[in-house]
Image (cartoon, rainbow, N blue to C red; front, top):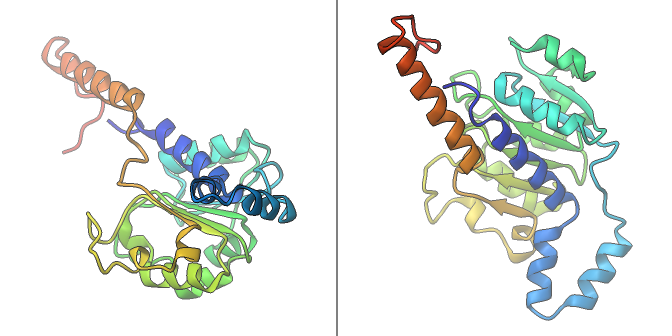
Length: 233
């Protein structure tokens, strides 16, 4: 059932971009420890950004990446994408998305969001070199596969303060091991990292779409004697 979780992943990417750019999770933590006034003063002084007018780079323009790009476009962002073999060019053109090579996308984007499968060509696609190309304060969202990002390099970029934040939904080993560098960051760096347990595409609505589509496909074959809509062999 391709495409059933597109909307859920798009919601996740938008939510993480907003939470990280506006430091909402960080603010929650600080208020709970009694630091309401200092965190409010810092957030005001830093003149935090919303999504409007930002540059968003989508790595992987399949059905999921396209849904994510369309969702960001509704927030008046400038969309670019990297994909050696994009399948949704017409949809990208409809929202004014520009194709870029990966290095240019990393360097120009305020938000980089990953939506590629884990293949030999994408393993370690985002490492120390690519992260160093990102704008100071930019954020990275990985809702693809854990092996696409070098976790040690991501942790180092967060620790250095160069990267504005990251949201990680997938890990090189799931569940992540205790010595995963993303779990051993200092308190300051950890405040700019949101970790979720591989649930970017999981919502009640998405599960309903998947189950309904699968059942309709069974009826199509067993009752209607027609070929399956989504054949996987």
